[in-house]
Image: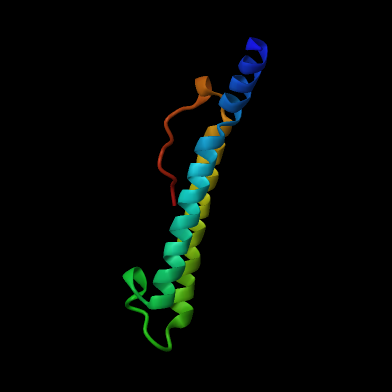
Length: 93
């Protein structure tokens, strides 16, 4: 019985399911927020009025890709063993 508990604890510790799902949900929420903002024309999209939808779409695409890249960076950090994880430097442009 204790062997089974040890194996399960090692498995969950290695794959870090809770952190993965938290970060995935955080990214999904951020993308949903961007969708709502571009649809309603609020926040960073408030300066794009009628006739400037292409510019708003470009900004939207850039911001969503930034969220996705941040998610990939977090995923890579979770995939590293704990002793090799170093503080991440901010991404360069």
